[in-house]
Length: 172
Image (tube, rainbow, N blue to C red; front, top):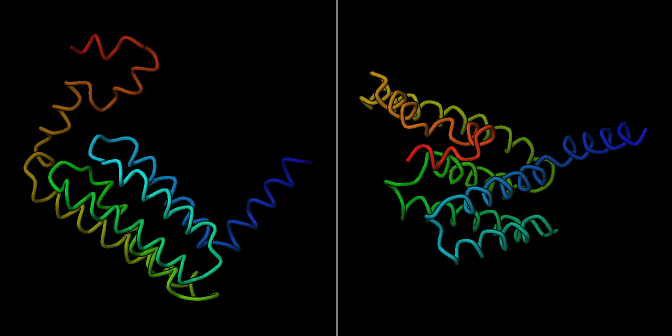
């Protein structure tokens, strides 16, 4: 009975508060991305969660918009300062933050429609850019990148580490 009640309550929150749920997911994914890499400075690690807390707890549309824009700006600065070293996920998170900020700029029920439209446009642009990037890169078309990563053990390092805890030491 409790599971059904929790599932019903969770689904109601997700369907009725799409912008807030999107902000929460963006904050969690962005914070995990920032904590995972060595490219993040201390001020970024402090500013992003602060903006996330403001965005999640604010009742004001202006404050929520500013906080989400701040999170997108932090992610954008991280991408800009580490342009050649950062993973594609950083680029995607910067654009998703910008699209989410535009949705937060709208008030009331319009924000969900804007969020859906921004998500569709963003997804189409990201897929197109990723497709063009892969067509232009010689490493993707001839298989050198994937083959090299497989031979070095980079692709499945975490998965193999679960079965063989000494895997990082064995690779070297």
